[in-house]
Amino acid sequence: MTTKSHAKIVEEASAWWSTAIIGIQPGKIQVRGYPIEELIGTLTFPEMIWLMLRGELPVTAQAKLFEAALVAAVDHGPQAPSIAIARMAVTCGLSVNGAMASAVNALDDIHGGAGQQCMELLQCIAARSTNGEDTIDAVEDALDEFTFEHGKIIPGYGHRFHPIAPRAPRLMALVREAQAAGACSGRYARAGLLVEASLARRHGKHVPMNIDGATAVIYSELGFAPPLGRGRSCRRRRRCAQPLPSCR
Image 1 (cartoon, one colour):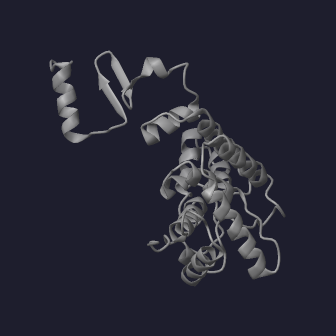
Image 2 (cartoon, rainbow, N blue to C red):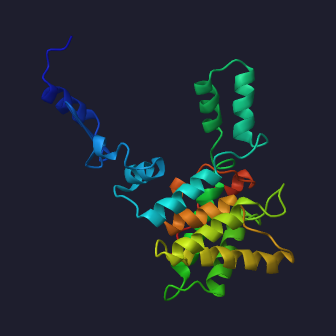
Image 3 (tube, rainbow, N blue to C red):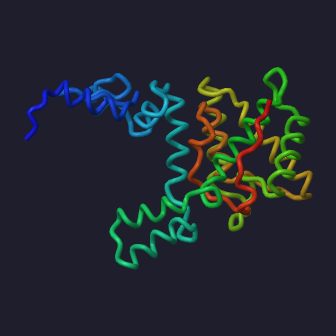
């Protein structure tokens, strides 16, 4: 049993680790400066995630849109590589912890990078836009640069199984509701729809936005950085998994 004081234990731990997310003192737990007892029973789970990531509380409309994106991404079907790996791990006798770890380890650039890559594309378009308005020229330039660097498949658009991914239209409708409520600008939603229109012109057929694209719109609208959009599937080849060039 240690004879060190609580203050000494905290001091020694702080010498190795520091965090702005949580503070621990004897009899006290704070998350982003809020006492945990004030958050329990007050915040929803999505609101708690937002607080931990952003250091602030979302307004109601932001929290609702954020929660919708999380709900939509709960499951991706048994054919998804990460889920198939988890199922195989359980078949081989692993515990739930081991199966989940196996699944998470499969979520990298190829299977897991599409959300981040689509967010980078949308934010690149926004950076190229003038006066806060997305233009056809900005979209076309960004797509030309992307396809030159990464290949013709655009993350967040098209689906190998669904003619129209059923989750995307509903999520985009919620983005419009959030915009009407003043929770987001709608800028990235406009960029996403302009990309969809451009792809239709380029391919001569409709290439609809999928859940990766819809959630990329939502997370961008809510102000999240692209690395936080990882975790969705991606059909692109290994050479396509590099980040987009900076958009200045």
